[in-house]
Image 1: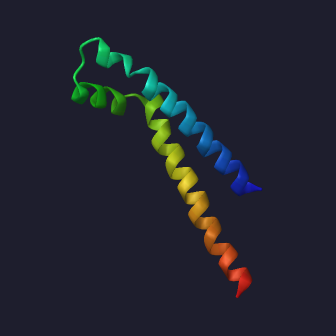
Image 2: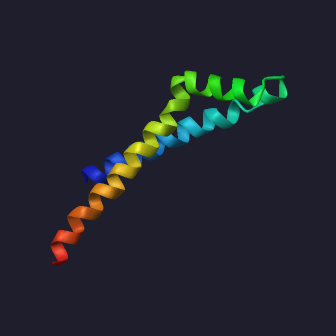
Length: 73
């Protein structure tokens, strides 16, 4: 039950983060360089949610795989 909760929490963080990252792509049309865009993205907390969500989902998937292998041996 905890794994499902953390998987959905991580997925929600990724959706929030990537939504803002795509939204901020409009800065490129306003004359920002790609380096300025990346600098802006890494300075915004709502965009860093995507990395946090990816980390949570990865941990849930990796940690759940170890526990299932012990049951089949």
